[in-house]
Length: 235
Image (cartoon, rainbow, N blue to C red):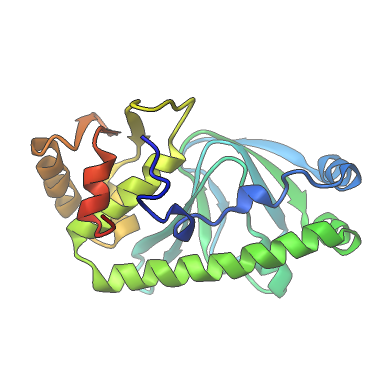
């Protein structure tokens, strides 16, 4: 089922895939000429927090987790980037080091565009620069919303909410009534919602007993997204 009208998905999605959509042909050609395509295995690092930015990354296949590491070496996932999204450009625009790290959540195909090429194209394209500015403004609102939820909602509510968001990211050739499989480990889920793995396993077991989802190994198959939306407090 579609969740439009039931859940404000735009408040949880960076919408970066729209940045490159329908750009003028000359901009797309310039980006295409500058890109270097790499394949990343699950778990491979794209860039590390505190590293100097060499370029931007455009995900063409797969998913990437963006995360931070605190002083106690604890990982907090702040966002799951999907195919079509660009990452790594904040540090280049700010002329600063990477504020977070990024790693492939699954086997992925990713285009790399060196920073000097990206900045040159950005300076020459009024369309691309305006879209990036709009995207950055929206991302600030998404992150503020994320922080608010992490502080104010229970673990059960946060898990339900993030399962709704992840369901949208894992849709493939979706049609109404189709179950959606989320392929994400329990440890990563715990790092995304800010809890420990044991809590995630316990709440998923509760959701299974309530008929909301089923699990097959690490895969989570969502059957009743409406109930998850209610638990998340958006009904």
